Image (tube, rainbow, N blue to C red):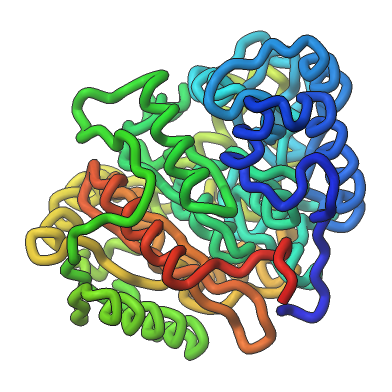
Length: 472
Protein backbone atom coordinates (compact mmCIF):
# COMPACT_ATOMS: atom_id res chain seq x y z
CA UNK A 1 0.00 0.00 0.00
CA UNK A 2 1.06 3.60 -0.55
CA UNK A 3 3.02 5.04 2.34
CA UNK A 4 0.65 7.89 3.21
CA UNK A 5 -2.98 6.68 3.03
CA UNK A 6 -5.90 8.52 4.61
CA UNK A 7 -9.29 6.90 5.09
CA UNK A 8 -12.32 6.96 7.35
CA UNK A 9 -13.20 3.24 7.52
CA UNK A 10 -14.07 2.18 11.06
CA UNK A 11 -16.57 0.10 13.03
CA UNK A 12 -19.42 2.60 12.92
CA UNK A 13 -22.86 2.26 11.29
CA UNK A 14 -21.31 2.29 7.82
CA UNK A 15 -18.65 -0.27 8.66
CA UNK A 16 -16.83 -1.54 5.58
CA UNK A 17 -20.00 -2.01 3.51
CA UNK A 18 -20.45 -1.06 -0.09
CA UNK A 19 -23.68 0.74 -0.99
CA UNK A 20 -25.51 -2.52 -1.79
CA UNK A 21 -24.77 -4.09 1.59
CA UNK A 22 -25.60 -0.87 3.42
CA UNK A 23 -28.93 -0.56 1.60
CA UNK A 24 -29.79 -4.13 2.61
CA UNK A 25 -28.97 -3.47 6.28
CA UNK A 26 -31.15 -0.35 6.16
CA UNK A 27 -34.05 -2.34 4.65
CA UNK A 28 -33.74 -4.96 7.37
CA UNK A 29 -33.64 -2.34 10.13
CA UNK A 30 -30.20 -3.40 11.33
CA UNK A 31 -29.18 0.27 11.22
CA UNK A 32 -31.28 3.41 11.00
CA UNK A 33 -31.22 6.21 8.45
CA UNK A 34 -30.07 8.60 11.16
CA UNK A 35 -27.24 6.30 12.26
CA UNK A 36 -25.75 5.92 8.78
CA UNK A 37 -26.23 9.63 8.07
CA UNK A 38 -24.39 10.65 11.24
CA UNK A 39 -21.64 8.13 10.54
CA UNK A 40 -21.13 9.48 7.02
CA UNK A 41 -21.09 13.07 8.27
CA UNK A 42 -18.49 12.17 10.89
CA UNK A 43 -16.37 10.43 8.26
CA UNK A 44 -16.58 13.39 5.89
CA UNK A 45 -15.56 15.74 8.68
CA UNK A 46 -12.61 13.48 9.48
CA UNK A 47 -11.09 13.35 5.98
CA UNK A 48 -12.31 16.60 4.41
CA UNK A 49 -9.66 18.85 6.03
CA UNK A 50 -7.03 16.95 4.02
CA UNK A 51 -8.83 15.59 0.97
CA UNK A 52 -10.89 18.71 0.12
CA UNK A 53 -13.55 16.83 -1.83
CA UNK A 54 -16.61 18.93 -0.92
CA UNK A 55 -17.70 22.27 -2.32
CA UNK A 56 -20.62 22.50 0.10
CA UNK A 57 -22.38 20.25 2.58
CA UNK A 58 -26.08 19.63 3.17
CA UNK A 59 -25.65 17.94 6.53
CA UNK A 60 -28.59 19.65 8.26
CA UNK A 61 -31.11 18.80 5.56
CA UNK A 62 -29.69 15.28 5.33
CA UNK A 63 -30.35 14.82 9.04
CA UNK A 64 -33.91 16.09 8.57
CA UNK A 65 -34.47 13.67 5.69
CA UNK A 66 -33.04 10.80 7.74
CA UNK A 67 -35.44 11.54 10.58
CA UNK A 68 -38.43 11.79 8.22
CA UNK A 69 -37.69 8.29 6.84
CA UNK A 70 -39.06 9.33 3.45
CA UNK A 71 -36.76 7.25 1.31
CA UNK A 72 -37.66 4.85 -1.47
CA UNK A 73 -35.61 3.12 -4.11
CA UNK A 74 -32.92 0.46 -4.12
CA UNK A 75 -30.41 2.68 -2.27
CA UNK A 76 -32.97 4.11 0.17
CA UNK A 77 -31.14 6.05 2.88
CA UNK A 78 -27.62 5.44 1.57
CA UNK A 79 -25.46 8.59 1.98
CA UNK A 80 -24.10 10.02 -1.26
CA UNK A 81 -22.79 13.11 -3.03
CA UNK A 82 -23.55 14.87 -6.32
CA UNK A 83 -20.81 16.53 -8.35
CA UNK A 84 -21.04 20.32 -8.38
CA UNK A 85 -22.00 20.60 -12.03
CA UNK A 86 -25.57 19.35 -11.66
CA UNK A 87 -28.31 21.76 -10.65
CA UNK A 88 -30.24 21.10 -7.45
CA UNK A 89 -33.08 23.37 -6.44
CA UNK A 90 -32.08 25.67 -3.60
CA UNK A 91 -28.32 25.10 -3.98
CA UNK A 92 -25.70 26.91 -6.07
CA UNK A 93 -23.88 25.13 -8.88
CA UNK A 94 -20.28 26.27 -9.02
CA UNK A 95 -18.85 24.15 -11.89
CA UNK A 96 -15.47 24.38 -10.13
CA UNK A 97 -14.95 28.00 -11.18
CA UNK A 98 -14.61 31.30 -9.37
CA UNK A 99 -16.24 32.89 -12.44
CA UNK A 100 -19.67 31.68 -11.31
CA UNK A 101 -21.87 33.31 -8.71
CA UNK A 102 -23.33 31.52 -5.70
CA UNK A 103 -27.04 32.23 -6.25
CA UNK A 104 -29.17 29.15 -5.53
CA UNK A 105 -30.74 27.47 -8.55
CA UNK A 106 -34.50 27.30 -9.01
CA UNK A 107 -34.77 23.87 -10.62
CA UNK A 108 -33.34 20.38 -10.18
CA UNK A 109 -31.95 18.96 -13.42
CA UNK A 110 -33.44 15.83 -14.96
CA UNK A 111 -30.32 13.72 -14.42
CA UNK A 112 -30.13 14.83 -10.76
CA UNK A 113 -33.74 13.68 -10.33
CA UNK A 114 -32.87 10.33 -11.90
CA UNK A 115 -29.94 10.00 -9.49
CA UNK A 116 -31.84 10.93 -6.35
CA UNK A 117 -34.82 8.74 -7.30
CA UNK A 118 -32.75 5.74 -6.20
CA UNK A 119 -33.17 6.86 -2.59
CA UNK A 120 -29.80 8.41 -1.82
CA UNK A 121 -29.54 10.83 1.10
CA UNK A 122 -27.54 13.74 -0.29
CA UNK A 123 -24.78 15.01 2.02
CA UNK A 124 -23.31 17.65 -0.29
CA UNK A 125 -21.77 18.52 -3.62
CA UNK A 126 -18.33 17.30 -4.64
CA UNK A 127 -15.44 19.13 -6.23
CA UNK A 128 -14.30 19.35 -9.85
CA UNK A 129 -11.76 21.45 -11.76
CA UNK A 130 -13.11 24.48 -13.60
CA UNK A 131 -15.96 23.29 -15.88
CA UNK A 132 -14.54 19.76 -15.80
CA UNK A 133 -11.97 20.67 -18.44
CA UNK A 134 -8.96 18.84 -17.00
CA UNK A 135 -7.94 15.52 -15.44
CA UNK A 136 -6.94 16.68 -11.96
CA UNK A 137 -9.29 18.33 -9.46
CA UNK A 138 -7.27 21.48 -8.88
CA UNK A 139 -8.61 25.03 -9.00
CA UNK A 140 -7.01 28.46 -8.95
CA UNK A 141 -6.84 29.83 -5.41
CA UNK A 142 -8.53 26.79 -3.85
CA UNK A 143 -6.85 23.82 -2.12
CA UNK A 144 -6.54 20.83 -4.45
CA UNK A 145 -8.58 17.68 -3.96
CA UNK A 146 -6.14 15.01 -2.84
CA UNK A 147 -5.84 11.28 -3.36
CA UNK A 148 -6.62 9.24 -0.20
CA UNK A 149 -4.05 6.59 -1.19
CA UNK A 150 -1.35 9.25 -0.89
CA UNK A 151 -2.24 12.89 -0.31
CA UNK A 152 0.69 14.22 -2.37
CA UNK A 153 -1.03 12.83 -5.49
CA UNK A 154 -3.94 13.87 -7.65
CA UNK A 155 -7.39 12.31 -7.20
CA UNK A 156 -7.91 12.63 -10.93
CA UNK A 157 -10.64 14.58 -12.60
CA UNK A 158 -12.96 15.86 -13.31
CA UNK A 159 -15.05 13.84 -10.82
CA UNK A 160 -12.17 13.93 -8.34
CA UNK A 161 -14.08 14.98 -5.23
CA UNK A 162 -16.53 12.11 -5.53
CA UNK A 163 -13.74 9.63 -6.22
CA UNK A 164 -11.57 10.75 -3.30
CA UNK A 165 -14.41 10.57 -0.78
CA UNK A 166 -15.70 7.18 -1.97
CA UNK A 167 -12.20 5.69 -1.94
CA UNK A 168 -11.62 7.10 1.55
CA UNK A 169 -14.80 5.43 2.81
CA UNK A 170 -16.63 8.67 3.66
CA UNK A 171 -19.56 7.61 1.46
CA UNK A 172 -19.97 4.30 -0.38
CA UNK A 173 -21.12 5.73 -3.73
CA UNK A 174 -21.13 9.15 -5.39
CA UNK A 175 -22.15 10.81 -8.63
CA UNK A 176 -19.75 11.65 -11.45
CA UNK A 177 -19.88 12.49 -15.11
CA UNK A 178 -17.58 11.84 -18.03
CA UNK A 179 -16.94 14.10 -21.04
CA UNK A 180 -13.45 12.86 -21.87
CA UNK A 181 -12.71 10.35 -19.14
CA UNK A 182 -13.96 12.22 -16.08
CA UNK A 183 -15.46 9.15 -14.36
CA UNK A 184 -12.89 6.62 -15.55
CA UNK A 185 -9.84 8.79 -14.80
CA UNK A 186 -10.56 9.47 -11.10
CA UNK A 187 -11.68 5.85 -10.73
CA UNK A 188 -8.27 4.80 -12.04
CA UNK A 189 -6.42 7.22 -9.75
CA UNK A 190 -8.37 6.30 -6.62
CA UNK A 191 -8.80 2.54 -7.08
CA UNK A 192 -12.52 2.51 -7.90
CA UNK A 193 -14.98 1.13 -10.42
CA UNK A 194 -16.04 3.75 -12.95
CA UNK A 195 -18.42 3.02 -15.83
CA UNK A 196 -19.08 5.53 -18.57
CA UNK A 197 -22.31 4.35 -20.17
CA UNK A 198 -23.37 4.42 -23.79
CA UNK A 199 -24.41 7.84 -25.07
CA UNK A 200 -28.03 8.41 -24.07
CA UNK A 201 -28.11 5.64 -21.46
CA UNK A 202 -29.10 8.07 -18.69
CA UNK A 203 -31.05 11.31 -18.98
CA UNK A 204 -28.95 13.89 -20.80
CA UNK A 205 -27.84 17.05 -19.09
CA UNK A 206 -29.69 20.11 -20.36
CA UNK A 207 -26.60 21.61 -22.01
CA UNK A 208 -25.73 18.32 -23.73
CA UNK A 209 -29.05 18.28 -25.56
CA UNK A 210 -28.00 21.23 -27.72
CA UNK A 211 -24.38 20.22 -28.41
CA UNK A 212 -23.56 19.06 -31.96
CA UNK A 213 -21.84 15.96 -30.50
CA UNK A 214 -22.94 14.92 -27.01
CA UNK A 215 -19.77 13.70 -25.31
CA UNK A 216 -21.00 13.77 -21.68
CA UNK A 217 -22.41 10.81 -19.73
CA UNK A 218 -23.37 10.68 -16.06
CA UNK A 219 -22.77 7.78 -13.69
CA UNK A 220 -21.22 6.79 -10.38
CA UNK A 221 -17.92 6.11 -8.61
CA UNK A 222 -18.08 2.94 -6.51
CA UNK A 223 -15.91 0.45 -4.64
CA UNK A 224 -17.66 -2.64 -6.05
CA UNK A 225 -18.95 -3.84 -9.39
CA UNK A 226 -22.32 -4.71 -7.92
CA UNK A 227 -22.89 -1.13 -6.75
CA UNK A 228 -22.32 0.11 -10.30
CA UNK A 229 -24.52 -2.66 -11.75
CA UNK A 230 -27.36 -1.93 -9.33
CA UNK A 231 -27.14 1.80 -10.02
CA UNK A 232 -27.52 1.35 -13.77
CA UNK A 233 -30.27 -1.24 -13.36
CA UNK A 234 -32.26 1.11 -11.13
CA UNK A 235 -31.56 4.12 -13.34
CA UNK A 236 -32.99 2.15 -16.26
CA UNK A 237 -36.18 1.52 -14.30
CA UNK A 238 -36.57 5.28 -13.87
CA UNK A 239 -35.84 6.05 -17.52
CA UNK A 240 -35.05 3.66 -20.34
CA UNK A 241 -33.72 4.78 -23.71
CA UNK A 242 -35.62 2.50 -26.11
CA UNK A 243 -32.94 2.99 -28.79
CA UNK A 244 -30.41 1.08 -26.67
CA UNK A 245 -30.14 -2.56 -25.70
CA UNK A 246 -31.30 -2.79 -22.07
CA UNK A 247 -28.75 -3.48 -19.35
CA UNK A 248 -31.17 -5.30 -17.11
CA UNK A 249 -30.07 -7.10 -13.97
CA UNK A 250 -26.41 -8.12 -13.96
CA UNK A 251 -25.54 -9.89 -10.73
CA UNK A 252 -22.40 -11.87 -11.46
CA UNK A 253 -19.81 -13.05 -13.98
CA UNK A 254 -20.85 -13.56 -17.57
CA UNK A 255 -20.60 -17.08 -18.98
CA UNK A 256 -19.48 -16.09 -22.48
CA UNK A 257 -15.76 -16.46 -23.22
CA UNK A 258 -14.74 -13.25 -24.94
CA UNK A 259 -12.53 -12.21 -27.82
CA UNK A 260 -10.41 -9.44 -26.29
CA UNK A 261 -8.39 -6.97 -28.32
CA UNK A 262 -5.49 -5.47 -26.34
CA UNK A 263 -4.40 -1.93 -27.15
CA UNK A 264 -1.54 -0.78 -24.91
CA UNK A 265 -0.35 2.28 -26.85
CA UNK A 266 -2.76 5.02 -27.84
CA UNK A 267 -3.93 6.36 -31.19
CA UNK A 268 -1.33 9.12 -30.85
CA UNK A 269 1.47 6.56 -31.04
CA UNK A 270 2.87 7.70 -27.70
CA UNK A 271 4.21 4.84 -25.60
CA UNK A 272 2.47 3.94 -22.34
CA UNK A 273 4.62 4.06 -19.20
CA UNK A 274 6.15 0.75 -18.03
CA UNK A 275 4.10 0.37 -14.83
CA UNK A 276 0.83 0.99 -16.66
CA UNK A 277 1.88 -1.35 -19.46
CA UNK A 278 2.59 -4.04 -16.88
CA UNK A 279 -0.90 -3.64 -15.36
CA UNK A 280 -2.53 -4.15 -18.77
CA UNK A 281 -0.33 -7.14 -19.63
CA UNK A 282 -1.01 -8.73 -16.24
CA UNK A 283 -4.72 -8.27 -16.86
CA UNK A 284 -4.37 -9.91 -20.29
CA UNK A 285 -2.72 -12.94 -18.66
CA UNK A 286 -5.51 -13.09 -16.08
CA UNK A 287 -8.10 -13.01 -18.86
CA UNK A 288 -6.36 -15.87 -20.67
CA UNK A 289 -6.25 -17.91 -17.47
CA UNK A 290 -10.03 -17.48 -17.28
CA UNK A 291 -10.49 -18.81 -20.79
CA UNK A 292 -10.78 -15.59 -22.77
CA UNK A 293 -8.80 -15.02 -25.98
CA UNK A 294 -6.51 -11.99 -26.07
CA UNK A 295 -4.63 -10.54 -29.04
CA UNK A 296 -3.20 -7.15 -29.92
CA UNK A 297 -5.62 -4.76 -31.60
CA UNK A 298 -6.35 -1.13 -32.38
CA UNK A 299 -9.38 1.11 -32.65
CA UNK A 300 -8.93 2.54 -36.13
CA UNK A 301 -9.16 6.25 -35.41
CA UNK A 302 -7.18 8.62 -37.65
CA UNK A 303 -4.12 10.47 -36.39
CA UNK A 304 -6.11 13.70 -36.49
CA UNK A 305 -8.59 12.39 -33.88
CA UNK A 306 -6.67 14.02 -31.03
CA UNK A 307 -6.63 17.36 -32.84
CA UNK A 308 -10.36 17.11 -33.59
CA UNK A 309 -11.29 16.21 -30.01
CA UNK A 310 -9.08 19.04 -28.72
CA UNK A 311 -10.80 21.53 -31.02
CA UNK A 312 -14.23 20.39 -29.80
CA UNK A 313 -13.06 20.67 -26.21
CA UNK A 314 -11.71 24.15 -27.01
CA UNK A 315 -15.06 25.05 -28.56
CA UNK A 316 -16.71 24.25 -25.22
CA UNK A 317 -14.21 26.53 -23.50
CA UNK A 318 -15.07 29.26 -26.02
CA UNK A 319 -18.81 28.83 -25.39
CA UNK A 320 -18.26 29.13 -21.64
CA UNK A 321 -16.00 32.16 -22.04
CA UNK A 322 -18.18 34.09 -24.48
CA UNK A 323 -21.62 32.81 -23.52
CA UNK A 324 -21.29 32.39 -19.77
CA UNK A 325 -23.80 35.10 -18.87
CA UNK A 326 -26.49 33.32 -20.86
CA UNK A 327 -25.47 29.82 -19.75
CA UNK A 328 -25.24 30.39 -16.00
CA UNK A 329 -28.21 32.10 -14.27
CA UNK A 330 -26.32 32.07 -10.94
CA UNK A 331 -24.06 34.84 -12.26
CA UNK A 332 -20.91 34.89 -14.37
CA UNK A 333 -17.72 36.98 -14.36
CA UNK A 334 -15.42 36.23 -17.32
CA UNK A 335 -12.61 38.09 -15.56
CA UNK A 336 -12.40 35.24 -13.03
CA UNK A 337 -11.86 32.48 -15.59
CA UNK A 338 -8.88 30.18 -15.07
CA UNK A 339 -5.90 29.95 -17.48
CA UNK A 340 -7.05 26.66 -19.04
CA UNK A 341 -10.55 27.87 -19.90
CA UNK A 342 -9.19 31.15 -21.29
CA UNK A 343 -6.54 29.28 -23.22
CA UNK A 344 -9.05 26.87 -24.71
CA UNK A 345 -11.23 29.79 -25.80
CA UNK A 346 -8.27 31.47 -27.50
CA UNK A 347 -7.21 28.19 -29.11
CA UNK A 348 -10.67 27.77 -30.64
CA UNK A 349 -10.92 31.38 -31.75
CA UNK A 350 -7.74 30.96 -33.79
CA UNK A 351 -9.02 27.77 -35.45
CA UNK A 352 -12.81 28.10 -35.59
CA UNK A 353 -12.86 27.76 -39.40
CA UNK A 354 -11.94 24.09 -38.89
CA UNK A 355 -15.20 23.47 -37.01
CA UNK A 356 -17.20 21.82 -39.86
CA UNK A 357 -14.41 19.33 -40.60
CA UNK A 358 -13.90 18.61 -36.93
CA UNK A 359 -17.59 17.89 -36.39
CA UNK A 360 -17.70 15.64 -39.45
CA UNK A 361 -14.74 13.63 -38.17
CA UNK A 362 -16.13 13.30 -34.63
CA UNK A 363 -19.43 12.05 -36.00
CA UNK A 364 -17.50 9.46 -38.00
CA UNK A 365 -15.86 8.26 -34.78
CA UNK A 366 -18.94 6.22 -33.95
CA UNK A 367 -18.67 3.96 -36.99
CA UNK A 368 -14.88 3.73 -36.74
CA UNK A 369 -15.16 2.72 -33.09
CA UNK A 370 -17.93 0.23 -33.93
CA UNK A 371 -15.76 -1.44 -36.59
CA UNK A 372 -13.38 -2.69 -33.87
CA UNK A 373 -16.19 -4.78 -32.39
CA UNK A 374 -16.81 -6.73 -35.56
CA UNK A 375 -13.68 -8.66 -34.58
CA UNK A 376 -13.60 -8.30 -30.77
CA UNK A 377 -16.14 -8.38 -27.97
CA UNK A 378 -14.17 -5.94 -25.82
CA UNK A 379 -11.04 -3.82 -26.10
CA UNK A 380 -8.57 -3.88 -23.19
CA UNK A 381 -6.45 -0.77 -22.73
CA UNK A 382 -4.98 1.51 -20.08
CA UNK A 383 -7.20 4.25 -18.72
CA UNK A 384 -4.27 6.66 -18.68
CA UNK A 385 -0.93 6.72 -20.46
CA UNK A 386 1.08 7.03 -17.26
CA UNK A 387 0.67 6.67 -13.52
CA UNK A 388 -1.11 9.21 -11.33
CA UNK A 389 0.84 12.49 -11.09
CA UNK A 390 1.49 14.51 -7.98
CA UNK A 391 -0.55 17.59 -7.13
CA UNK A 392 0.67 20.51 -9.24
CA UNK A 393 1.59 18.52 -12.35
CA UNK A 394 -1.76 19.60 -13.83
CA UNK A 395 -2.06 22.65 -11.59
CA UNK A 396 -4.78 25.14 -12.49
CA UNK A 397 -2.36 28.08 -12.34
CA UNK A 398 0.09 26.61 -14.86
CA UNK A 399 0.44 28.34 -18.24
CA UNK A 400 -2.03 27.05 -20.81
CA UNK A 401 0.59 25.52 -23.11
CA UNK A 402 2.13 23.53 -20.23
CA UNK A 403 -1.23 22.24 -19.04
CA UNK A 404 -2.29 21.30 -22.54
CA UNK A 405 0.89 19.40 -23.39
CA UNK A 406 0.80 17.41 -20.13
CA UNK A 407 -2.91 16.70 -20.38
CA UNK A 408 -2.72 15.43 -23.97
CA UNK A 409 0.12 13.04 -23.09
CA UNK A 410 -1.78 11.76 -20.04
CA UNK A 411 -5.35 11.28 -21.32
CA UNK A 412 -4.86 9.55 -24.66
CA UNK A 413 -7.23 6.58 -24.25
CA UNK A 414 -10.53 7.74 -22.76
CA UNK A 415 -11.79 10.34 -25.30
CA UNK A 416 -12.49 7.72 -28.01
CA UNK A 417 -15.46 6.47 -25.97
CA UNK A 418 -16.84 9.98 -25.58
CA UNK A 419 -16.61 10.87 -29.25
CA UNK A 420 -18.08 7.54 -30.37
CA UNK A 421 -20.63 7.24 -27.57
CA UNK A 422 -19.34 3.78 -26.64
CA UNK A 423 -19.25 2.44 -23.07
CA UNK A 424 -16.04 2.02 -21.11
CA UNK A 425 -15.29 0.84 -17.59
CA UNK A 426 -12.24 1.44 -15.41
CA UNK A 427 -11.33 -1.36 -13.01
CA UNK A 428 -8.62 -1.14 -10.29
CA UNK A 429 -6.56 -4.11 -11.46
CA UNK A 430 -3.03 -2.70 -11.14
CA UNK A 431 -0.76 -0.93 -8.68
CA UNK A 432 2.35 1.19 -9.00
CA UNK A 433 5.62 0.14 -7.40
CA UNK A 434 4.78 2.35 -4.41
CA UNK A 435 1.19 1.11 -4.04
CA UNK A 436 -0.96 3.65 -5.86
CA UNK A 437 -3.85 2.26 -7.93
CA UNK A 438 -3.64 1.81 -11.70
CA UNK A 439 -6.89 1.52 -13.63
CA UNK A 440 -7.39 -0.77 -16.60
CA UNK A 441 -10.10 0.03 -19.15
CA UNK A 442 -12.49 -2.24 -21.03
CA UNK A 443 -14.51 -0.83 -23.92
CA UNK A 444 -17.41 -2.46 -25.75
CA UNK A 445 -19.82 -1.75 -28.57
CA UNK A 446 -22.62 0.75 -28.01
CA UNK A 447 -25.29 -0.68 -25.73
CA UNK A 448 -23.10 -3.45 -24.29
CA UNK A 449 -22.81 -2.31 -20.67
CA UNK A 450 -24.15 -5.67 -19.49
CA UNK A 451 -21.24 -7.41 -21.20
CA UNK A 452 -18.75 -5.08 -19.49
CA UNK A 453 -20.38 -5.55 -16.09
CA UNK A 454 -20.36 -9.35 -16.43
CA UNK A 455 -16.66 -9.27 -17.25
CA UNK A 456 -16.02 -6.83 -14.39
CA UNK A 457 -17.75 -9.18 -11.93
CA UNK A 458 -15.55 -12.03 -13.15
CA UNK A 459 -12.33 -10.04 -12.78
CA UNK A 460 -13.32 -8.72 -9.36
CA UNK A 461 -13.90 -12.30 -8.22
CA UNK A 462 -10.62 -13.55 -9.70
CA UNK A 463 -8.54 -10.57 -8.57
CA UNK A 464 -10.25 -8.87 -5.57
CA UNK A 465 -9.80 -5.12 -5.76
CA UNK A 466 -7.50 -3.40 -3.29
CA UNK A 467 -9.31 -1.06 -0.89
CA UNK A 468 -8.22 1.35 1.80
CA UNK A 469 -10.84 -0.34 3.97
CA UNK A 470 -9.10 -3.69 3.97
CA UNK A 471 -6.19 -4.72 6.19
CA UNK A 472 -3.14 -5.65 4.08
